[in-house]
Length: 343
Image 1 (cartoon, one colour):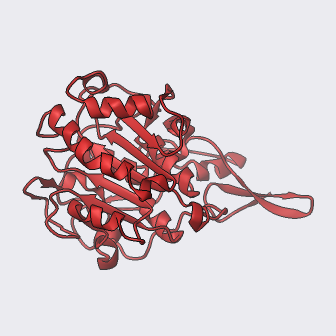
Image 2: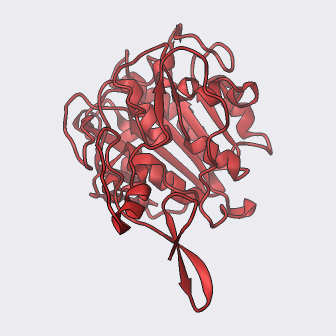
Image 3: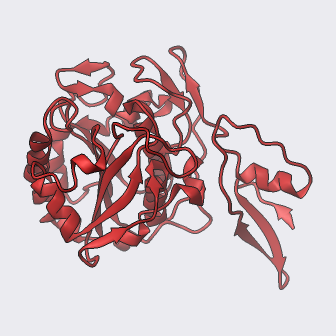
């Protein structure tokens, strides 16, 4: 047996050939200390929580690109690369959305497609939940800090390494790559991309964090991105406005997408919330309240319900599985759950 340089894998010799085998098991939370001896040390290296992820306060940005994070197997061929969209809404316990007559559209999606009955936010307040969904870690952030910065690998780094296109659409963002804390109803705390130093400081990459009004044009382009992130503004995401306003925005904006060629070509839309209003918990530490998560998957049977507990890291793991890349941070722990039963 030999240790492979790709974290989380070992090399085993079988029938005269060396083959990679993945180590399994949970990654401890980033604040925990792990001590391992002998063979256990090899497993500890694969389950080392948030190794390589750091929170960075204002100052010089770290240099050097993060590791690629690709699994030994290649991503799906171009003809079958899935189209995945993530839409993040705000501050609702599941019971205030599912069954609420003010949210007929979201309830209709949940009934027609699939919903996670036992989904949870990671923590409170907003920002660390967005970071967890993007990178499998909160980077130690525990507030909605405007000037803080973080560094570590993210989902979109993995996609870039595999040649898979991505773009993030922020409603009310004034210009691409906007660095301000707020502008009108745009809030940076709901835009995790602009906190990651190597994304925000790279002009070419942060130009893919754009105002939401560009989405329709991009979807009609032959070069439409395979992965799309959408953050509505502070009213339309439900942060400042009612559930009825939030639901109406979803009906107006999501329904045309579900009728597009982008969606019919291996499309999956995950609609989730950053956090609830309680401390309800699951999944080895997630305690951000029980949230609504609806999965709209092209070609999936209707009316699916999953009772598998899942948090934001488990949602990230599901997306990583769709693209054939390894699990980052907390997403590497099976305890984070999965949305696979809804696909």
